[in-house]
Length: 179
Picture (cartoon, rainbow, N blue to C red):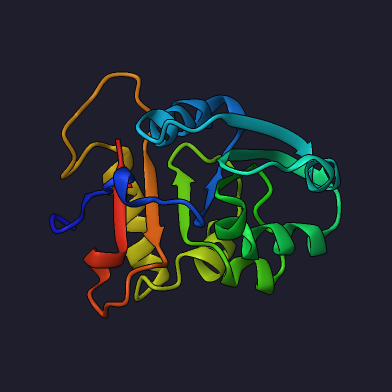
């Protein structure tokens, strides 16, 4: 897996949706990094329906474990993100509650390598099936988690990234990592 490269977070632009599989605490550094060069306010919500009543224009919306609210409003928000001038960051430690329409509209998926669920096969099937086999997915996770082919760093949470905006057949154009 030595061909895997670091994700260029500056590519994420207004109108795109980022899905982070992990918890808010471990995801905060990634959220801060994503917002650092954007000069946009960060607004955090815990209920999708609450957000739909208050959305202004231009900002980074963080939906933190939004277990309340309708999936219809979530899909409406994602589809209209460009119109509202938003980058949407959805953080969830339960990535299986979202339907196919949601998954089809996600631009970037970040999987925290410290994810502790027992559902790696489901994660692979729903979010990382671009990787040829489940075994390859597990090898990639293990390599990244143990700093193989990655510049070692201290106390940094790492992520496997799937860039769904790329139109390529090359796995290493689509799959990358964040240190």
